[in-house]
Structures are given as structure tokens and as C-alpha cells.
Length: 291
Image 1 (spheres, one colour):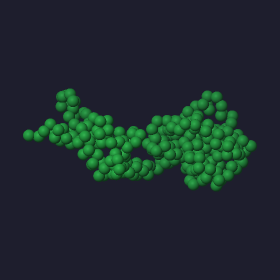
Image 2 (cartoon, one colour):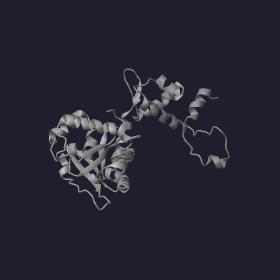
Image 3 (tube, one colour):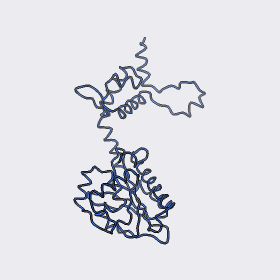
Image 4 (cartoon, one colour):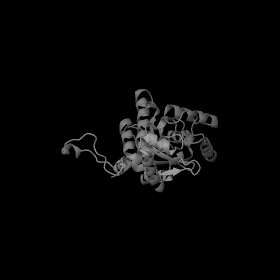
């Protein structure tokens, strides 16, 4: 006759029964899950939210499992690379396989394809010109744009923006979330070219402006690239928090005020957040880093 502990382990490989018996018609409507898989996934979630490596006993306690069952689950996860184990302490941490799968999933997405529905919505909600851009090396590249639906609209010099990350809403939205060393590298390559009398011309001025981008959750090009044109931008970030692009909304100075501008700011932030969520970034994309 099997012992009680062996029975517990054996049940972990079976379909978890419902706690409360229900009619067959009701049970068929509920998803049937594998208890051992649920437990393994829970262990991964615990490791993902831990501040450091965790010992077997600590993992078992947090997961509500006996040590033997927890050890078998961790051994299986370790075998397949989902969990790592320190040779010295024997403590556990998330394995490299998690990152590999995450990166593979992200590569399956094409940024333009993923962003386009949200970009169209931004264009519809604001009626203004909208852009999707990335930083390739030190060059700012516009991947997609939709023109304003209003009769008076702004033009767009996308080729001229290549060296204008410091002077455009899309560029500053990206720069704001890069390490300072990376920002310095970009500026060293492109310089701080003056496009208008309002273009930021010093490193100190740019760093202060980028601090405001992080604090406010959006970037502003206030006639810094083109006279008479105001642009609002926000960063697109992935599951790790890394910036992968940005969106912007451009309008003539005459419309860049009051309720219309406030609505555009909110719409740009929302658009970036929606796109970011498709790449695994949880919650509000622009509020993860302190100024």
C-alpha cells in the first residue's frame, strides 16, 4: 500500500480535481489543468520575483510544497534549462532558457506590424500626423507614418531626422531611456546640430530635457526640428524595460495648445503603452524609471 507522501507526489502528475463536486455539465465548462505543471510554473514565478537566489527549503515554503516534491520539480526544470543552480550555495535562480524563449518570441514580432493598429488609432483619435521610429546605431529612422486627417497639416523631413535624435520627439523619447554612456555615444556621432533657434545645443540642456521626459512620461519637440511644428512622443519598451522604438504625434503650432494638446499627450502615451504591452512590458511604459 502506498504511503501518504507517495500518494501526494503521484497526484501531482494527474489532472487536478475540482475542490467542490459539480454536475458533469458544469465541470466540462471549466479548463482542466495538470497540477504538477501548475506547481512548476508557480516555482518559476517565485524565482522571477525574488530579489536573489533561493534555497530549496525557502522555495518549498513559499510554494506550499513539501521539500521532496519541490526538489523533483526543480530538478526537472533545471534539466531543461528553465532553472539554474549555484554550484557553491546550491540555491536556485531562473535559467537561461527563460531568456531564450522570451527573445525568440520577441523576434517573431515585426515592430511595424505590431504597432500599426495602435498607430492608426492614434492617428484617428488625434487627427494629426503620427510616426513610428527606431534608433539604428546613432541614426534615427522613421519606420512608418500616417498623415494628418485635417486640411492644415505639417510636413515631415524624415531623411533630415537621421541625425536629429536630440531635436525630435521620437528621438528624445528613445534617448531618455538609454544609459548615459549610450546617449553620449549617439551625440558624439551626430553632434547637436542646430535645426532651428529652439534646438537644444548643449549636453547639459539635453540631459535636463531627457530628465523631464522620464518625469512627464512623454517627450516634446517644441519647434526644435521644424519651425511652427510641435511634436509629442513616447517610448516603446520591451519585457526587460529596454527601449525598442517610439511613437509621436505632430501638429502645427496653432493647434498645439489647450484640450487638443492635452488629449494628444494622453493618446501618445496610451499608444506607446499598448505597443509595449505586446512586447511584454507590463503597465504604463513610461513610469518604470525615476527621473
